[in-house]
Image (cartoon, rainbow, N blue to C red):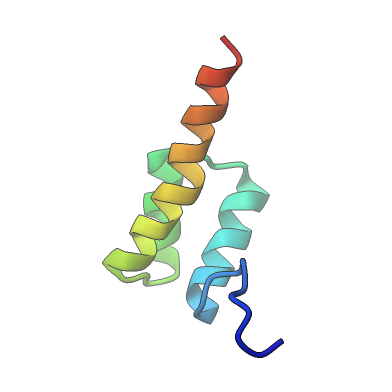
Length: 65
């Protein structure tokens, strides 16, 4: 669809990192850093992973209390 923003991140390396983190269930900073090294991500791509995995996971944990 033209003009519709995708929910998937741009860039093959970032998409591969998202898949890897999801498969490893590595929703912590150490796993995110590992994904960044494995897929040679930029600082902006690393920030994307932190915002979408680490921050959301913490929000989910705190909402269960």
